[in-house]
Length: 102
Image (cartoon, rainbow, N blue to C red):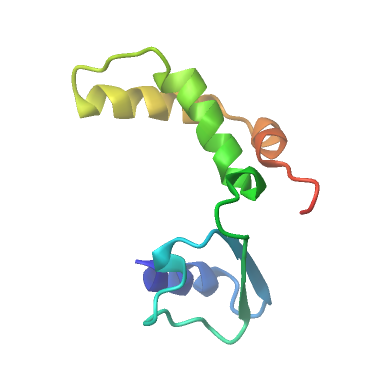
């Protein structure tokens, strides 16, 4: 899936140099990963979720959409998550994911 993601992402930016900042999930470092020549993968230190901007987004999403909620179905939970994502403005997204080192 990571290879598919890289291929699809880079189709949009074929003439750009791309840097991805990634955690050390297995699929980010898989042996069969095909990293395009215009792409650099930079890895966060292991066990450092506080450095990963998306962790702040997940924390916000859990607080707003799922905290103290018991969903009867997976679809109900997915609807709650989608509703919160739809409320997320670009400005709020930047606020949530801002890291001083980026």
